[in-house]
Image 1 (cartoon, one colour):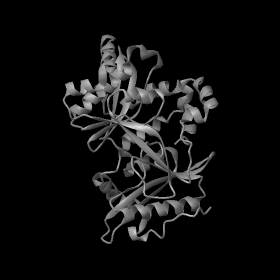
Image 2 (tube, rainbow, N blue to C red):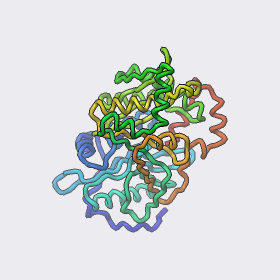
Image 3 (cartoon, one colour):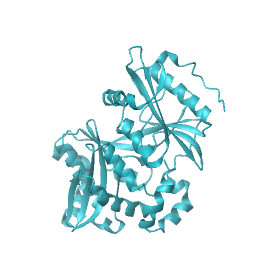
Image 4 (cartoon, one colour):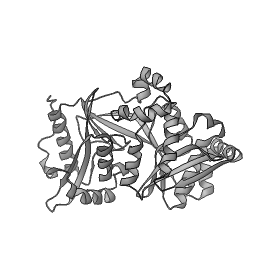
Amino acid sequence: MSRGHKYGDGMTGGEVRQLTLRDEQRWDDFVRTCKDTTFFHQAGWKHVVEKTYRHRSIYLFTEDETGEITGILPLFFINSPLGKKLVSLPFAPYGGICATRQPAAASLLAEAVRRSESLSVKFCELRSFHEHPCPDFRCREGYSTFIMDLRPDEQALADTIGKKNRNMIRKGEKSGLAFQSFENKAALDEFYQVYTDSISALGTPAHSRGFFQEVHARFPADVSVATVSKGHKPVAALLLLRFKDQVISGWGGSLPDSLDYAPNNFLYWHALLEARQQGHSFFDFGRSLKGTGNYHFKRHWGATERPLRYWFYPYNPDIRPPQERFGLGAKVWKLIPPSINRLMGPMIRKYVV
């Protein structure tokens, strides 16, 4: 499966090693100090995916002559019925190489190609915010996230989100919506009910309840659940992640029959306010595919769009969402009750990474 890559031996960047349990603290120390890392680069994400979906991790790092980590590349080998692939990172919008030195990045890329060829994968995919130094990886753009600066005062923030959002938030207030935030594990059940009801209406297979429980177990101080209720009934929910000076919208949804109350506008506004009150500087609205309703909803909040660059070796141009790639299946899946999605969805979701 040799594809004529142009890397040399990559050794100028230091020895490439594979992560072991004893290295995890050093890995996370690097993640906390390197400016390009994300929540999902943490070693805890490795355990979430391994325990929940049994995918094989290949976490690579480089060291200098003193033993200091100079670069990391977390990968997962996905042995899917639709073909084998290496992904950095599955079930996450971001991943890829983070390095303090260019030679370290080159060494990690060379090792990624070697692993791709030895495992005979269809492709290796690196999900990143950044440009890439490797000539044989080709970029495919299509996804974006939106980053809101929370440092201005509340009035400035209200001005930023625009008149339409302010009107929808007032509509939610007049409809009697109430916002709450929880950090305990019990709140995951409330979130999971809303999440699965919401994505079932979109024809999307659900993550398992255990997936979210494991996220909370691995990052208990950095996970919270934000909900919007009408009366005593939750109608919208977000699972939020905290990393460095940022709050990230990880997963969420709203009940289809609640949309007349504008629960999503109400939910995101109060999540922004809470993140600001907690001292965070930025709010990440989460990944959206350009042109979708989710993308246009987030684009109108006045946040800064950050294109996500997905790098493939060899090139794979198809990054459409599952609803488009598996259009007929998605239409059928919409007819399946949420209770069945909760039971069977994770068996499919395991491979929709």
